[in-house]
Image: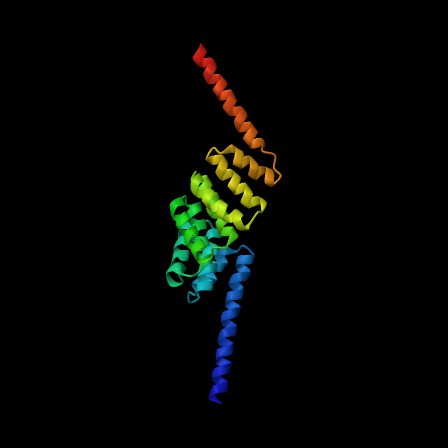
Length: 201
């Protein structure tokens, strides 16, 4: 009899907890982030609830608080790839680019096959003009993935390093007309002509 009562109690408790989490998910799905944060505050913090809390905080533009939430998750669960990814995204929005790179690297260490993380990582390297690093990462990616996005990232890496011929090859492989390269070449020719004209006068 005691076992039945205990089992009934546990089932009820689990059902109530699941129902509360569903209310949080429903609030987030409806973009009612303030309501989600209110519901989360009433609960004991768990990893799934903290992930929802971070998402709600980011939805409200509270990126510093969201970063703290994701860092709390990382402290408690060092193998949580999603927490590293979300922390990196927060760092990017806060212009903490070096810290974002580290979080992306940690996420890639945990899951090297995660295409989204690799694309974001390479994109950040490109925006920071770390073209050599971006080329290394994009080359690793194109060994297994010949998609347009992988080749485009590799082309941008070559382009950033001033290696226009390999960049053109990448663009050709994905069927893009390398107009950007043509425009850059024309701009360089114009600049060179202007320099020579000024020099002769």
